[in-house]
Image (tube, rainbow, N blue to C red):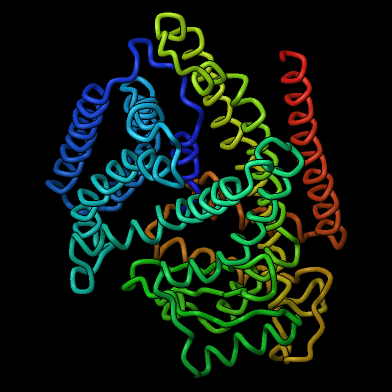
Length: 475
């Protein structure tokens, strides 16, 4: 649910084209201030208009639509500040020209952080007015800081940590920078270390704590033992009753945490909680986290190979002959390439993510299913030694569908609204009912998805290889 920040963060680190009128500190700061004021005013007017009307379901949907449009506003504001205003060029060539470790990367994220904080500070009023936020545990400042930790920090801190470790290693051993193989191996090693540490980082950012002993924890432990699932701990995700959700973090068995929000545990029945846990375990069993990591790794490699061809004059020229460097064609090409990257992530990764969610849904249904493919109701409760059936039964589908519907209603999500990474709840329920009508339907789906994963990863790797060959040919 926080992946929407990947695109604006990618924009911050995307190689910037030369500014037509040259780098200018005053112009960059003025553009940043004016854009931030306009961006905040736009949201202020919309939120005030929203809060003048009764807090009906229609207003809830209007606010959700505005939140989705916020990503487009955020991207437009960032392009204005980083590229048109010259913030990126000023950071790299005027303020920190010697490229110190992490300082330039942090400065590049300043506009995005300011835009996000401005939006969250105004969204606090709408969340409070629509009943999505309890005023007792959250004030405006605490709400903004919590969103920064749980949203922006979750995406930005791993990237900054990876960049910092990589830059430090290159500074200690400059020969690695001259070796494509050495720098690639170093980047791969740093990525593995950051991915391994990510569960600890997420636990700290979200303030999660071990789930206290009780019937709920005993149920979760019995389901994990039945599935022979290795994990570090079950964590309670405190949200002040705002969110009903769960997630799994950790590519490796240690550390690996299962996080369940407070409201999810309060509102769902034990069987529904078991099905949600099965959904999260399904992501691990079907290697979805590794698939996402490979997808973003290969995509990042393609961008890294294409970036130097685009920005070589900017990176390697120190004569400041901006009359020759300031080419609108280069600026336009940069914008087109970034738009293609956004479209690729939005369409291709979105489709892959939705199919992976369907696969995890099927696993969640199987966890609360019996061995009878056509059962109307379970004859008895599933014991800790009950085998995992190869096919979800109608009762298991009904239990998991009920959990999905409850989560959507608690979070104020329309059942027919489709997201970037998730299909609509109504669509996911219809898919489960359709795919489990025949005994072989689920197996056919798994086979098709496996072929899709392999094809997508091979196609991305092929594009990266072609980009590398084109770069060699151009030089």
